[in-house]
Amino acid sequence: MGDEVIEIGARLATESARYAAMGWMRGTSGNLSEVLSRDPLRLVVTASGGDKGELTEHDAVVVDEHGIAVDGGKPSAEAGLHARIASVSGAGAVVHVHALAPVLAAERWPDGVVLRDLEMLKGFGRAAHDDVVTIPVIGNGQDMTVLGDAFERGFRADTPALLVARHGVYVWGEDLLEARHRLECLEWLLRFATATSMNVVEGSA
Ligand SMILES: [Zn+2]
Image 1: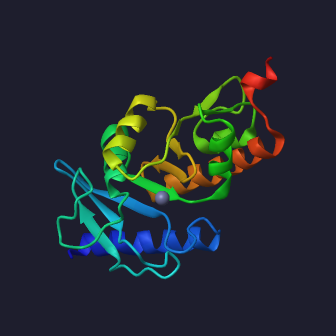
Image 2: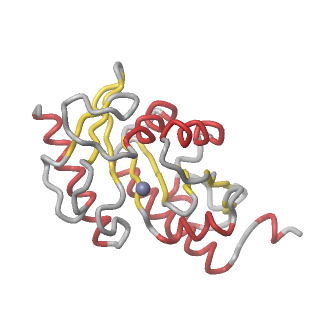
């Protein structure tokens, strides 16, 4: 692996340990990626199967725009969706975790989770007031092309997150730090929404 891949691998390992400590990457679940190059699209993705609290800088794999390994490693099965998100959104980093709040929210609002009038929306890159944010929800599945198509249908450039029902959440940003901040704030927002059953549609009825 090249020096740049090792450097990215180290960042992915550090972020994974952080999310694992928060209980968002239990067992070997979840995966993180950073864009290595745009043309052609190449991502460095966490390797499959490792305990996300114990990754090293070597537990990373370079994949192409389809999520297929180009350096012989074994990427996460979900690498294909990372690549699709990076391609469509232009993001520099994509994080995917199996936190509980996003899955509870997707269960309750399978057509999209509506959020508004919450200070934490600013941390997600939106306004705290007079802004209605709908986090898209797609069904779960093992075919990343099907999931990618569903993601693309609901994609909005101002909403950098995707909920996968009965599965988890994807959040993206310019880099891993921005993605982390957005994820942390979104997780809080979804926790609030499920705890209060806040919903614009229900609330306005
Ligand atoms: Zn997953």
